[in-house]
Image (cartoon, rainbow, N blue to C red; front, top):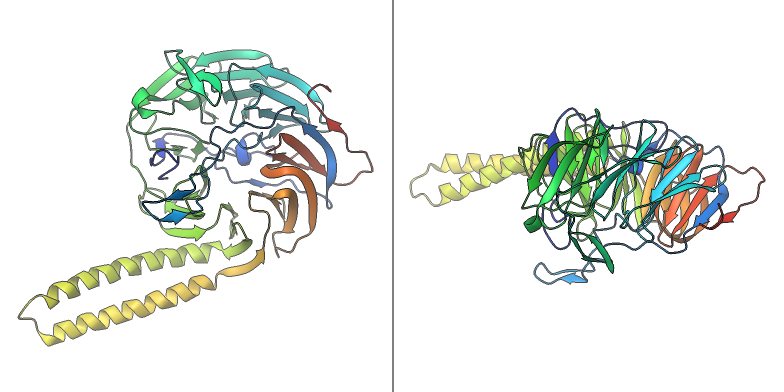
Length: 470
């Protein structure tokens, strides 16, 4: 599914067959709102928002990977994009009037009141918590670099259970800290009474995929991989669990590996997987059950609705007629395969001494017809563009109701999805990597350790809260 997910290896993604349905809710109970990582919410702001409150961490996030290599000399690719960007901000999940997030700076998970920004409770682990937790049935589930998976009461923060993801507890230096040799560097998925997670970065040491009983934390099954790592956010469809680096079913049998541009960003929509952004900011799209790409897009992120796709890049955001574009992409793929087959046949005929001239002429005619249809299909795909506007907010995007919310450096912006025209902009401290929409608000997380709540104006002041101010 995804190749080169990590800058130090070139794995694909794993997927596991099983009855795992995508999570949908009015809240924002997991990263990007659901297990498809769609970034889409029914929540919308009644008016251009103001900053209702800001919470600031004493220490900014401490990413596991500081950035991409400057260049790839072998492939002659320069100014490469970072592909390990999952922990550059404290990504927020929301249930009711509670917002939860983990910290890579001080090893805590916190719960904030969404109306005031006040800290309701905190919980310490023995290592950085790099990925957003998941809320399920009034419980909070997450993993840590200490190698454990945790379950807490969402209301109080009381520990319900803690399970070490691997049999051993060996510690190694990591990012200036002592962490488990098998840190939990993926998110968790909670479905059908089970908690799915992975632990381990180094295939030679074993990468453990585990299923735990959601109620007790007891191990249900375990699969150890020795050729693929795992880091980033898990995705789940109705039938598969996708892990950033390979493909297996819940009994441990690998289904397939799908190659691609790479990156830790991915989303699922119907039977289509989109992933990237690759070395140069390119998204790949693969249909379920297939290993080769259906289409590629220049961009960092994508938002998909029933009839539209919004493509988000470093310099612009655009809207496509999704259904027509994908059908044309399928047609173009089929025509390209036909053209390749005809070209091979023409090359073989050219090497033969005795071939009827009429046969060669017929083959040339077929090649010309296919080439013409390819050109027509490509032009039709270009016409699927509904609108395109410049963007200076390349770091994040979600769809909140009918508004696209974009994160940039020192600023967030709101654009009506119908037109793409800028409706509002607000300054933020740092780079806005994290966006969430719930409880009639948008929550912004930045690389400086700030979390902002944006709401419709109410005339109230905008307090700034520190961890020492409960």
